[in-house]
Length: 305
Image (cartoon, rainbow, N blue to C red; front, top):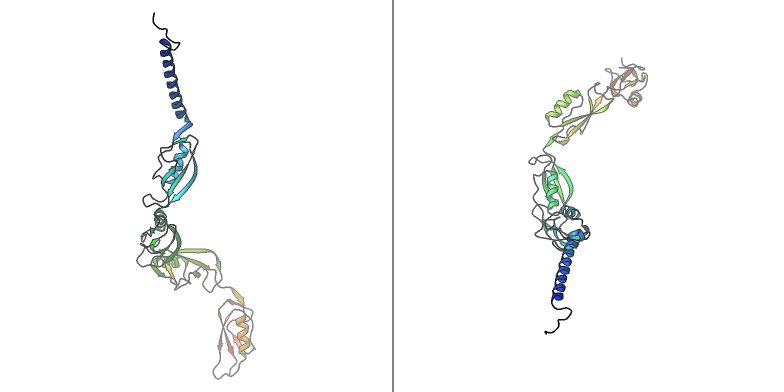
């Protein structure tokens, strides 16, 4: 008779092998299930995406943001992702967080040529290369259209560190000499200013002035000043002169009469008859107690032969 087989020989050994294989298969399957069940995921590819897009992508994947590191880069545009930690493709828990590494652009930045651009476009161009739009000043230009950039300071082509402020000098257009429109009607004043390329704003409320009621009493900027085409001139309309009481100065001497009338708001003209040596006032062009327009001229006449 042959030797007896041990307890794990023959069919028993085969059974153990089968059970082991089944357990291994179940273990691998459980591992796959564990990974695919959302416990772990992979860091998505974020290289070259803007920071905002990358943050949105992480959120869509259920991942958090644990900070942003900014580094200089000659190859990746400012504001775009250079890398991440963990790196793209690395395994990470489904609720884990990723640190983004974002480009600051090159370490030395060349000021772009934005001459002829609108102010908004010039600002965008500066920000794109990593420079900060600085103070805006405006000046007249015969060559550059109103609202467009004439030049920058520092000038285009110079090298600067990132985040350097760049001042923008913007055109006010060609200068225009403001005409004198006081004393004109609103309609005529508006037409004359429009011929010079100027706009009009008629201010509410009227004021007393030497101008006729309804005509232009004041303008700002004043006549002879320089304005840019498209600028607005403010106009104030007259409601006519203020009427003032005229004092009676007959019988007074010239100096006293003049002082009294000027203090009352009038201009004074002295009329002396031929061969008159008297300083005493005999008459006045507007009788005392009557009214005359403020600033109007009162003629006083001395006694004569």
